[in-house]
Length: 353
Image (cartoon, rainbow, N blue to C red):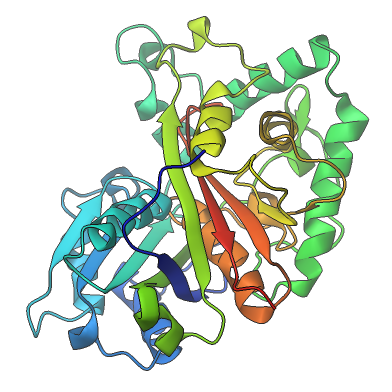
């Protein structure tokens, strides 16, 4: 059972960019500002009304130190704000903001994240996440590591290449209804990138940003007709060394889901941050999701994978379905690191109808 929280916190608004292959004509601030304006407009709040602001991004992607401070120009420097930053996907910034609101230090929070992958090679950049002594010097890129995981799943009898292709096809078919997705509709499975993963099993490279507003208690009901209440939120991490992990399983996801209360009652929707088709297989098993659950109705990370924002998008998409009345109890998942190394799970609920 999850521990009782002193306050009820909800996602009351969500906004995101149209995710694109490249936004070379825009700076990070120019990419962020429309999203920040949009998410605040949905609540009627101004920057001065926000009690806490937290962002997620990666300086490696930007290619300069402390680049996140430049993004604050999109929020506004006046009046002074209470602000924090995590060098992670925005889902972890949401976790920090959620804990801030639980303490009672603020009643509202703005959470945003952004990433521009197009200027460089994400496959190479992400190698810097690896163990610096044994793995990183070998430069195994992110697709090669995901292929190791996919092959382990095939060898264990949990999937095959046709099943992987079906995962990609289903996600991108769902994305046809998502105007923000980068890839929509049929995508050729293509040639092998790294066997057994083909082009269709891999995420698109693209740029994008996302933002959510959190609010506590009655303030949430004032700002949103049907708030998406965060009933549980937890994150866990696997060992840094891939050699001591079973790549066919994700115990950290399972443990995070258990502590978030995901197994207490069934969910009707799950937004999974699975950049590779094989990773959805792992997550479905770890989260005990059956065919009755609508998985990635937005298209997921196979339709749009803006690094440092894709996890926050999963939370936002799940919350938006509750806002619209399309879901009553949803699960959102975010990941970071190679082969599902770090995993966050949130359980969201709408008020009874």
